[in-house]
Length: 259
Ligand code: NAP
Image (cartoon, rainbow, N blue to C red; front, side, top):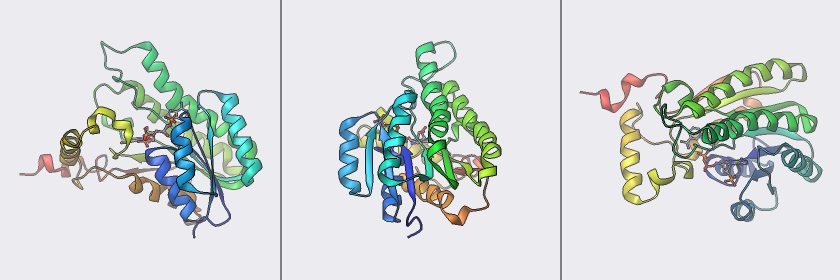
């Protein structure tokens, strides 16, 4: 049990990567506070996670609600040892040059960048010294994928912020690192995986672009987050770990380039 006696906050803990991480953390002995906007999926997640989890409604763009949820969680389970600032959206329709809407652009930045900053700031008074903060980044911060200007900028901003936060929080022994997933099978992909046929085609497309030849699963990320959260990562500070089957580090190894 690598997280026995620890308390964790996971934003966006009711779906995808966040929910997978919440399950793993509970299994590893942690008490876990999850947040999200959707009451129903939060309630379902809470039932599955059991008594060592608390699910609270809090939109990361609502700082007062975020602070209130963090306080409530700390009152129930004690101060936090781990924060996984994970909540994020893809941004419906994306932000392609020539057709981007200001409203979509600002929403992506507001949730995926500003929301991450204020999650950490709101948690600060409730963080134990030597805590571990993990921010959720993305390969899209470096891959130059068309249509993703706002999303890519937000995730590149997350990387930059992590380094600054690491400097600011090192005096308290608090670590700040980024997990940067490649394409992972979660509801964030919406229509791309909405039917079995669509999901198969998506899986094939991602597999062709990925040296390890597959779509990632939520537990590829949750297990990396567990490592960063645990004492095994005690000397890792200000880093970004790409969990992407090699998509960023060795793109030429992808099946699409093989003869
Ligand atoms: P997901 O299943 O759609 O989960 C997103 C989570 O974020 C949900 O729990 C959602 O809960 C929460 N959320 C969204 N907006 C929120 C807000 N304003 N306030 C509070 N919670 C909010 O998608 P996922 O793939 O697990 O995404 C998790 C993170 O991984 C995101 O930051 C995403 O950018 C990142 N990521 C994912 C992939 C991938 O391929 N899946 C790749 C790279 C990075 P509610 O709907 O209840 O608000």
